[in-house]
Length: 436
View (cartoon, rainbow, N blue to C red):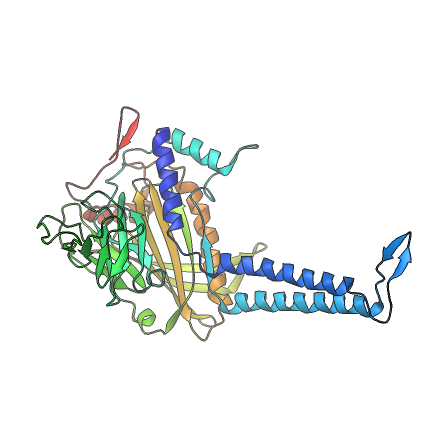
């Protein structure tokens, strides 16, 4: 991959990262440090406040501040109280607040040599890596754009997916709309400074307004007539399972299947307990050992277990049913006799051909302490990051050497081909440049 392509890939990851809401973790950490500083400041003030019963006495030609026992006691009391408040705050976050972990494209998946940064290691790995004969880079299907809570009413956000810049906004009717980001007038980005007006998005440059439903321009402030050709692409979208999804088909065809709604999430039986986000430098198609591939869905039964210090902890064994829906969405449904039931939504959205944004969002029973699903999510994150190390450095082999026991891999590849069509975009190297 050429250097310009590497820079563009890292820039896209940074932009996509900036579009995300960091949730309570980053803000909470800042608040914790602020509270700690306040506690130390109050303690210092209490320690240095002179006691009225013991006046200042001269020493060495100046004034010396004498610290009484009562002042010392006040300082210790302040410090103890402050630390207790911080401990209670940490305990509250542990037991009740969702877990939010957001990784950048260089955080995981690379092993920097001594004296080298992670960014340098990532650049070298991308430059030297052989990608192999890749399938088309954007399969046809539904893709996650944002979580529903990230987009408030009358708010607009800029999102980079599928090699495109999109403007995602929520109209006054509460519905989420997805448009191409660039205004056909003079090319302004509708998501950067644009304003929501009713169910339309207003260009920040000259005030042209585009309807979210069909992308047509409905108003030009300084013109009595709106040209018929004045429109932007309106993406087919839906909002299910607390996620905003868009439909992509290289030939512009209508959706041939829908994403199943998870009733437990919709009716609040399962509540949000956190999410993790990673960027992967690989093709979207990964190996999946599914044992029940059917139409646009594929299913696999798993058994999760835990090993501590070499000992198997049978109490933590958990039955998991993984269902892949289309090329990019996976539902992990897990049950435990003591820890209850939960569901994890995994999505893989291409930012560009060899850069994927992967998210894991967990929902769990409301009557189970948040620390339980957070522990499960953290464990899944650790396992996933081991796989990221492989994906970021692997070569795609179109005709792999498989043994008899690998039959499920062959079945999954055949099942996945249904999401490609004749005109699906492919990746090519030409003149030391990356074109697709």
